[in-house]
Image 1 (tube, rainbow, N blue to C red):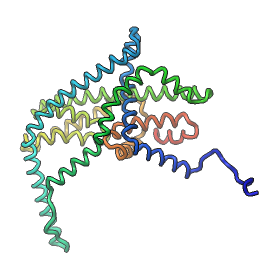
Image 2 (cartoon, rainbow, N blue to C red; image 1 turned 180 degrees about the vertical axis):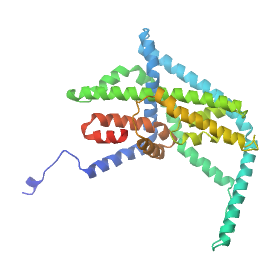
Image 3 (cartoon, one colour; image 1 turned 90 degrees about the vertical axis):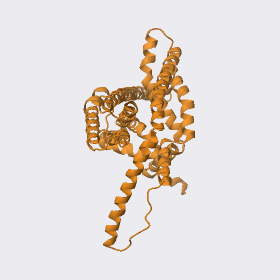
Image 4 (cartoon, rainbow, N blue to C red; image 1 turned 135 degrees about the horizontal axis):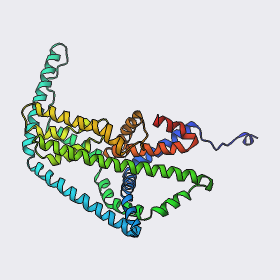
Length: 352
């Protein structure tokens, strides 16, 4: 019979793998708010776990230690947020002065583009005399696009509401979660799973702690540099610029935006702008070649191409949060691939 000739196989073919991957990424996109909240909670838990472990070593119960560390972290973030918000409020009150400079710069750029367009149009047909200029509505559209990259109001509320509870439960129940995760796998696979989880834990902790220290150093150095340059709002500019400087590859350019924006209403010559660009470029080179290798080490073993593709993909999928999570996610995938025989070629490609 025809039924007897049908053979079933447990190994999926290439088409099935592609469909499965597509379904996974579709779920990640649809449930982005939930997944991003969970991943940020995992990173924060790895960051705070050494403090909880230190309290546990002095005989403070892990539940109480987790609560104390979490409350201290929230208080620290609230204090830093208050300082930034206070400077941001002062900057917002002074915004009309900066917006006037931006409007003049936009008008000058628009006039220059119009002149170039007229010269090009004189040499050929199709001159558009009614070319639109940059208006307030278009600037509002750009602002909406930027806010879309950050996330919706629902995503922010979900993050703020659930993140502290997730972090607390992950810290307090760390040992139980570890054992429960091991028991999800067959007994013969548990040593490999234990080794994989250990490497993932060490990588994530080293990445988060190291980048936090590098970020603080860059913020302090940038703020001090702006203060020495007599730039207005040096603290606010240092915090934003130092944080942007952590973005791989694009950070050195993104870090120029805050001081350039503030300096446009303060300086009339291009000399200070070149000075700021050079100083921030030096900070970026020092951080990339000295601070990051020393503080993050070789725990994130990804090649430059893998990092670039990860930033492009996860930034496209999740916006600004995706840029933050891109490298930890990709590095975790590499560690898992290194411990699964069939996936080891992928791990070698990511690290090669």
